[in-house]
Image (cartoon, rainbow, N blue to C red; front, side, top):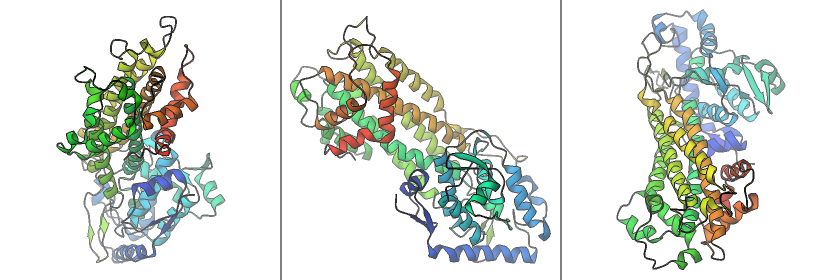
Length: 510
């Protein structure tokens, strides 16, 4: 069981988001966080008692900001807000995404700028620790005022509405809360708005994808190293001096990783001093391309780390009594990063597919058997596996159109420029899945190609990766039903088994 995660509003990490969302880590609140929460709440209580005007507290929302709400209607206003905004459509978000949303929302409330009561935060923590996951439709957010629609669905169970998934079963919220021993919350002033005004869907998907992308980039380097050896490529372009004079961080890291993977390779040694002057770009430029992709992932991680420790609702309530209407809910910072991250992962797949083509194409494969199979003609080998990779790469190119360049005004043009960051997030998930499969196909083909290089042995890292693939997928001696092989290799990548095997062999990738 992972270590518990203690929240204080300022120090949540992507690794902790992953631990709670996917590994079941429990959540606690740091005692030092409560005073700011209570000061902020006291400001709201004083404002309501005096009947002062403040957006979303004693007024309507969006275009209805000019409508005054009486003290006696404050609770009804907040309840109505959740119900009216919960109009999402489409398949529900994955369980890990919703848990990440819940966690990040709690951390945002602990900034002490949202004006909520302590008991509301404690209720959200109890839901997380009790495994109560709201059912949240995936479509409906335009990324400003944040992820209103999905967050409304996430918040509905607090008032005993909507559905909750518990232990794999969907239950009405009333039943799920009763089973967990939780009484529904009666929302007070500002609390409904504080629950739904923010970027938590975008941030949740972004954090989980950054974690996946980091792993996929390591797998892509493992596959690239195997292909480099199988295609009798040169390791000279990996020389550290090359990358020291163009010191982009990712480029140097990838070159170093490829040197480790191919170190002590009998295959590389077998063609030292050959007459070939230069390899194709998909081999020679792997550090430059995958390194640039790595830098994009780390830039996204930086932005997301800032976002998950930010106050993103409106208005912000400060402990000194100031209440400010503003735009921290706008998803533009995340929308840009999510779009760029999709482009980077698409490039990981694109260059991978080019190496797969070289492995199966007898005109490019440096003596490997056509389509990596004996008795070609009778057998088609990996011919159609490359087709599949090409199809997924093409699909990714369509998915990489940036959603962040679009905007459709909402709320009678009060919200006249929106980020569409949720669209960026949703299509990013599809790009990630496609890219993982494309890299798996390359790894599968590279393993087959290395079989043909026996008795020459590949480098230590490539050898470990080859052995791990062969534990799950036997060599292709003649045509067989190939889809399960691709699925099994893809699962190795999803589970981290390939890069783990390389690490266990003593090859530590950065």
